[in-house]
Image 1 (cartoon, one colour):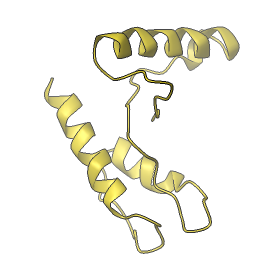
Image 2 (cartoon, helix red, strand yellow):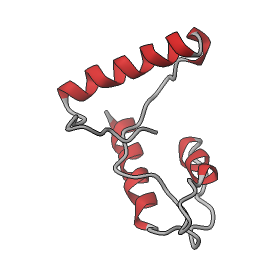
Image 3 (cartoon, one colour):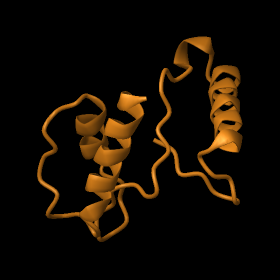
Image 4 (cartoon, helix red, strand yellow):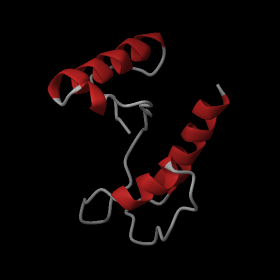
Length: 91
């Protein structure tokens, strides 16, 4: 899951950015760590204290039922991520 910053959108220039991100991970960590899929999201699910809810991201990535979202600062983020994941799987 990636949030693009600096005026990069997820259209044509975004595809180049995603390719660059894959190559960066491959170079820094190793080719075995190159992500199969990178999903561009508007925001990550965070608690009110600012911690990223990795458990919810795993649930979405593995197509499981999303667990309790009552501790999120903005629960609408999960619906945006789910919609984006469904859209990318339809392509």
